Amino acid sequence: MHNFRNLDVWKRSIQLNKILYLTTNKFPNSEIYGLTSQIRRCSVSISSNIAEGSSRKSNKDFQRFLEISLGSAFELETQIIIAKEIEFINEIILVELIELITKIQKKYIG
Image (tube, rainbow, N blue to C red; front, side):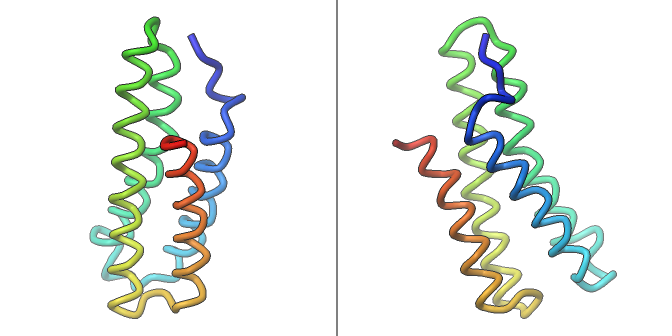
């Protein structure tokens, strides 16, 4: 069993959650059930799957949850790009968020 609280990837994903919640607070109210909800659920999925996977007894099971978490990170990257395209965030915010997401993705890959 792994202690998820000690994993750098989990810590970074929690930081990302906080930033995304603050960022999506500025999205239009009409998006509360749309892109705002998608981004929030997706970002929470990253840290949640790491935590859930850490409870598994085998490394193979843990690895599967990490793969799901990585998939959520790539999904989130797409949602952030969409938010920029429809002008919910600016280029500066986009770059900052993509850098954070990329750091998380790299923790899985190598």
